[in-house]
Length: 229
View 1 (cartoon, helix red, strand yellow):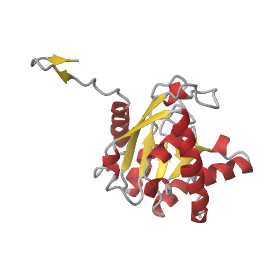
View 2 (cartoon, one colour; view 1 turned 120 degrees about the horizontal axis):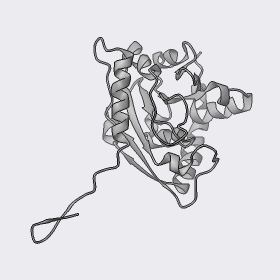
View 3 (cartoon, helix red, strand yellow; view 1 turned 30 degrees about the vertical axis):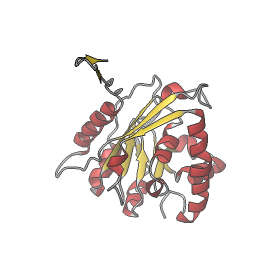
């Protein structure tokens, strides 16, 4: 058996994610989701990789995914925090289908993540290994890419912009005023033949960083023929 919660917990996860967690997070923040076109053909096992700056990150990604993907996705959670007490491990398992990850190495406990992928379960991991202390994206560790390379599965890059400002380290609840958060899904990255985990990590990091860039301001055409911003 893998480290994630049993599939029999699906009804409980539906209630927790879609009837409680999503309405709650969406009511205290203003969430914009883009890139759903990259998810239409996505199926089977894959790795979701996002930047990490807030405890909002996992709920945001899971609840932004279509239900057919979100219900199956298992979330990598810090073993020394989320699995240090039975009650916390149980709650994290039901809501997030979580499995333990070593923060220092940015990878799952030996065999767990690979076993989940072999069972057809998508994984959500944060390659930085821990939440950013300043809101900036930091160096990606190669664990996520190594999984994708070893199992020849795609990586779905995700950029989370605004989550740090909404709920940075030290806060247990988002700031007031429904802060804006952008969840941007990128095109899946398929490991190329012979590509190393380090090379794929570099590609992944570059794509996620690009997803964090604010969109270009739209220009409007002046009725007289000139452009106006």
